[in-house]
Length: 255
Figure 1: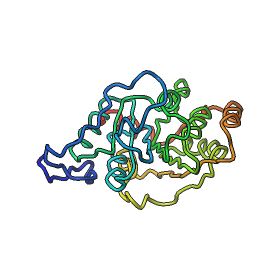
Figure 2 (figure 1 turned 90 degrees about the horizontal axis):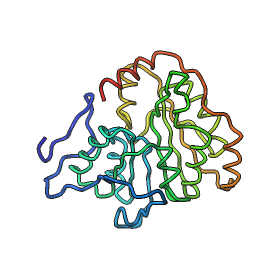
Figure 3 (figure 1 turned 45 degrees about the vertical axis):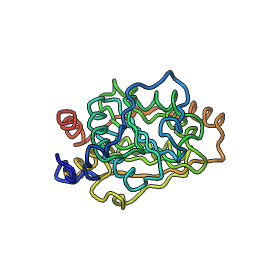
C-alpha cells in the first residue's frame, strides 16, 4: 500500500488513508505494567476523555472513532495477538496518536487496569458466545464484568454493546438494565452504516440480524451496591442455537 491509498476489507473501505511514513504514529503497548490503574495521561501524553474498545478485533471501530473524534483518547484491547498486529499497523499508518492497542482479555483488563470512573465510553462488539455449554464460563458478559464496566465508567458514561446472537442478546437485555439506563438501538449506527466491526459486516452479508444497544451509567448505584447486585444475578449459562454457529466457525478460519 502507498501513501494516500484507502484499504478495503470484505469489499468495504477501512477508515482513514495511509500517510507518509514520517507521519506515522506508534500505537502499540507491547507490555502492560504490573496490575494497577493505568496512568492514561502518561500513556497518551495528554489529558482527554477515554474510550475503551473491549475486544477490538482488527480495529475498525477504534480507527473510525479516533479519526472522527481526535479530541478523545482511544485504548483498545483484544486477547488475540494477530488481530492486534493488524489494528496497530493500520492505526500507525494513519497517524492516530490518540490510539493505543494492547493484548489482554477484557475481564482482566477491566478488573486489574481500569480505575474507578476512568472512561467516558466503553464499547463491546460481538463477544464470543461460546456455543459449547462446557465453555459457557468463558463468556465475557457476566454480572461481575458488567459491574466492572459500571465502576470504570465516569458518571453519565456510556456502555455500547452489539451481537448477532439472539440468546446472548436476551441475556444482556435482562442483566444490563440493573446497572444502566439501557436502550436498544434500532437500525445501523449513523457513523458506520456499513458496520462498526468486521464481524458485523460478515454477519450482515450473511443475512443475520444485528442487536445493538446503549447503556448510560446508573449514577444512583454506588460501587458497593453494584458488587452486591452482581453477586445476586445469574451467570450466562444459556444454550445457543441457530445458523450463527456456522458463521463463528467461518470467522475462526478467516481471521
